[in-house]
Structure formats: C-alpha cells, structure tokens
Length: 254
Image (cartoon, rainbow, N blue to C red; front, side, top):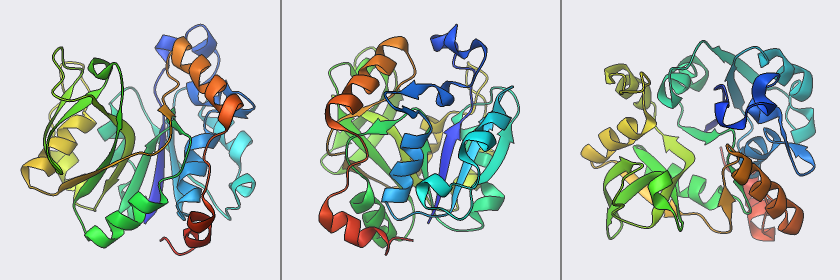
C-alpha cells in the first residue's frame, strides 16, 4: 500500500497567516502541520509516500522534508496541483505513483492522537473497494456525514443541515486502483471542484465501502479555532501514538 498526503489549497480561512506560506507548513505546537499526516502513514507501516501540494510555497516542502529522513524514509515523492480543483482532482495526480497498488490518503491538516495501523491491515484483508474512517463529533453539520445502517454506509452528505448521524468522515481514505477511473467520471460541483464525497458515494453505490471508527481524538487544523485546538491537544497528550503491539506490527504493513 502506498500513502498520499494532500497538502495543496490556498488556506483562505487562515489568512493572513497563509498569505506568505502554505497552510500545511504552519506550526501545530512544536512541529510543522505536515509532519503529522506523514507520521500517521509511517506509523501504519507505509513507507512509499507522495506529497501533493501547490501554490507559491510548493518548493518549501522540499526544503523542509527533503527525502523524508526525519521519518525514517529513504525517499519522498512530490507532485504539483495547479489551481483549486478539489481533493479528488488532487488525488488524480498520484495515479502514476500508485502504479496499480491500493492507496491510503490523509488530508494534510488532519491530526490524530492514535494510529491507523489496524484499519490499514483490515483494508488490506478486505481485498479491494474503499474504506473510510469516522469519528463522532458534536457538530457533524460542518463535515461530510454518513448515513449508516449497522455496518453499512448508505450515503454520505456534505455539510448537511439535518445530519443523519453524529459521525464525521475524517480526512483519511483507503481506495483500490479503481479510484482513478471513478475520478475520471466525475463532474465539477457547484464549487467548480471534483469532490471526494462523490468518489465515496460511487463506491457506496457499488457496495464496496466499509468504515471503521477512529480511536482517540481527531481534529483538523484548517481554521484559527481548530489550529489552536490541535496545538493544545498535541501539547496536552501528544499525537500519532503507537501501542506496543501496533509498533511491532507496523513493519509488516505494506
């Protein structure tokens, strides 16, 4: 399995901080934001990783991350997204990198307390299709919200006024190689973007979507409020923790 961190966008909700740099290069407590999603993938045993970025600060990722030595990696891959085409459009740029293998995508402003190794291993045993990670939240109307029927995902609605559950679809997704064919069928939304929710709903329509609930806390860091919350959570309890059993197994996940 290969890993992809999506770190493009203009970060308009964090202006003026993002007037001179990419959002994902901002600090979250004592590390740059981009460190956390990379470590999430590394903790899950994923060693082949691509960073998708864009804008005027793309070169700063190479200066900061190099070939990933900080994370114990021998090599990091990079690609550039022109403009604001949406998450699914950014993902499409990684098709050659994926090279037919399943992929795990982490949005660049997602920060978690624990790790996703067990979910990654469950997806590998699943043998195809897609898996999303969910988390109970108090304000689901801010996120993509799944309608659930037991262990089955019925549909995902983006920022619904009347949410059908109290779960949020967090920014961690796993797909087989069919995802790139699905993206090619998408039409831009009213925002002019290719939406990841449309990708997920097409997998649901095929009855090829599973879900797991993330353990530990989760937050994004795309607003001033959530950026502060993320820094406080990391300062108080740390992020990307690994259980002893998980740490021993991480090297076996591919």
